[in-house]
Length: 183
Image (cartoon, rainbow, N blue to C red; front, side, top):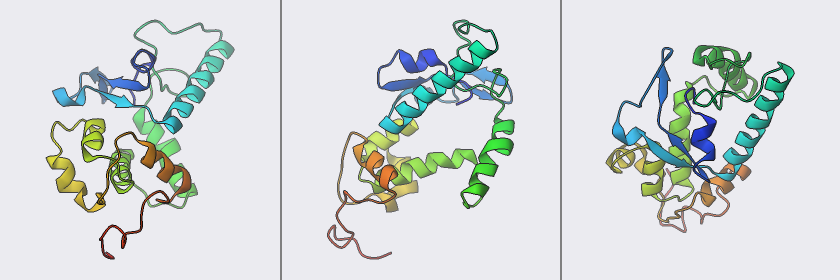
């Protein structure tokens, strides 16, 4: 998130490319080759990115700035428009948001697990979920998330969007209908 640039979003129509990361202020390529990947932009993410870009443009205009220089067009910036500081984001935004929502404290990285478990529970194809996470093979996915994989598949992200919009799995048959017992 801290190294995502608008050029990596706009140029891939319906997808964004992860090609860099930033750790302790140093931007570099991701740690594994499979981490460089294209990620599908689901409808709610697309709406959020549009809003983010508009807010950024408004802030830059208020500050008397034009468009950012190519290569400096970060999708997420700090409150003053500079590089995003993940520590600031975690302490000033993430943890207070969790507290306000009455959710237990967790790291931002754990949203990756939430995505995977919710996508699988919604019936998304494990191969699609693995590709979105940057796994070269689904074995890791099956090892960690097998309990969330129901006896049905989809391949386009629509079941996850429906699950996230309603907070339930309305499109899915009940567990008893799929042969799964109570857990």
